[in-house]
Amino acid sequence: MSTETHPPSVSLPLTNLLTLNEQELGQLVQQAGWPRYRTGQILRWLYQRRVRTIDQMTDLSQADRTRLTNTATIRRTTNCTVFRSSDRTRKLVLPLEDGLRVETVLIPDEDRLTLCVSTQVGCTLDCGFCLTGTMGLKRNLRPHEILEQVLTAQDHLDPDERITNVVFMGMGEPLANLECLSEAIRRLTNKTWGLGWSPRRITVSTAGLASRLKEVAPLGVNLAISLNATTEEQRASLMPAVHGIASLTTLLAACRRYALPPNRRLTFEYVLLAGVNDREEDARRLAKLIRGIACKVNLIPFNPFPGSLFQRPSDHHVLAFQSIVRQAGIDVFIRKSRGRDVLGACGQLGDIPRAPALTQIESRC
Ligand code: SAH
Image 1 (tube, rainbow, N blue to C red):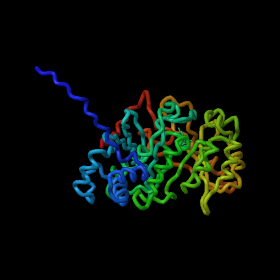
Image 2 (image 1 turned 90 degrees about the horizontal axis):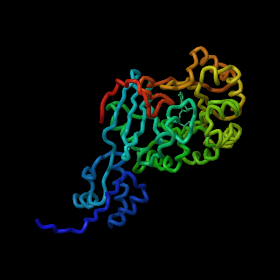
Image 3 (image 1 turned 90 degrees about the vertical axis):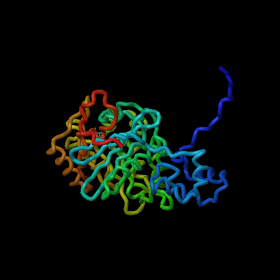
């Protein structure tokens, strides 16, 4: 038997086109000697038509498609698992290339269909009432992994459905991954080749990284701040990591300085924990703290998860809290809990060591 040896063949890994931003794709197009407009053509195929293969880019000649296929590919998510809640909320679990998983939640409500998107696997922070916090930070999501959640959710919609809003309130702290988030938002809002959404349909929620708030303003999106406490002590005990970065006083000062576009307002989120921050004096302090800020308040009654230490207040308590804040002249809403039976509600995303039987698995796509 001959033992011929061949030099190892050097094949460069294929570039996933979804990992490139507009400028990087422009360089690839230039290196191939193609006209500039080809960049926009390719981007439109990726984001507006959501193709999964280069071969589907039918306004490129067959020869050009073959050439592109020699160096590049499109790697979209496969094997996404969908859990359907009895209230029609759907939680999509997307596997990432390194084996980690990320969760995104589609929430239908009257004439709205909101997608709740994750920005990290796990979370930088350790808020005591949030399941994601117990995972620690596994890693930041890259721009294409953030956007992939939107693309996959769109692929999964019924023919008469359309996503009306995107909220970055899934796993992770968006402002701890702001650069990648900003690039994902550019692709969502670009009208020439991107999804073309108005930034007004997008909300970024932060636990309170005060010094970064000002970097959100140029994106033109809505900003929500998870306040959750009305004294420094309360916030330090409920949200220790973020409190270590910025106190409640520093955070509220940053909110007052925030450059709100005309006719827009901030949203303050407030998780209601029975006997902890849901008392009358908390409601009064909350109203006082945010007085004079153009804002509305969303109250979120606590959503329990396996092993959680807090209780959800009674509806009576929630309404009493709302009415005190309202009497101070503040617009205050109670966020409906959606998707709790598939652990798809606020604060319920993450790895569950002793997962209850999630029997509502609807499909894999
Ligand atoms: N890290 C960001 C976004 C993710 S959390 C932030 O803190 O804003 C999205 C919202 O869910 C936040 O307002 C958070 O306070 C709230 N939340 C977290 N855990 C919750 C739980 N178990 N029940 C109800 N709301 C929760």
